[in-house]
Image (cartoon, rainbow, N blue to C red; front, side, top):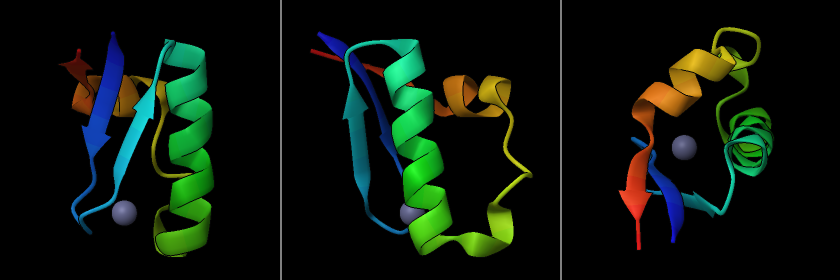
Length: 53
Ligand SMILES: [Zn+2]
């Protein structure tokens, strides 16, 4: 089990650890939401995350 973020665009980002989740979300944001780059903190990302099992 890990954590998951359901992005507003429909993308689902899953990871086993907080660090991995933050890294994957940063990659997704830079690819799909360039206007948000630098505006989402680690706390924002983890606050959006839900348990995934
Ligand atoms: Zn997205």
